[in-house]
Length: 186
Image 1 (cartoon, helix red, strand yellow):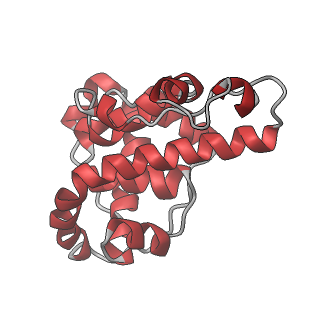
Image 2: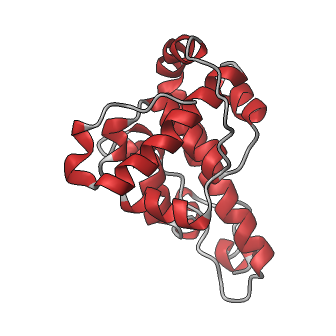
């Protein structure tokens, strides 16, 4: 879509123009915000991506999806920053992680999506953010720590708990997930 066509003689885009353009990926972004901060508060943080015209190339498509996800995550982080800061010292006191957990594979990402109705109840907000930022976006522990304002030790240990919880929940099934204690990382 050309901006000149969108603006139709105007020198700037209106709010309605932006809303029309930023409509793609709504469901994916709503899932992201809902997973991070809960379904009730999610709509306030969904930053929709641009509705891509068929003429746009895959590079633009990828860039736009990335931008929308980052903006949604940033908005959610603003609402949860204090909770994350309060939780970080708990993870810093955990035992050192002896086995590194890799970012999520495509199969593990599918598990996350399938179990996303039960995982938020099993994972605190720090674990959820770390699972998205390191597990899905594949940012380093240091990058995630810098964005969250916590130590990389807290990030690594929170990711360990989130990663292991994802695998436990996927093995035992959603209906029995509440009977299993949170994993202790090794």
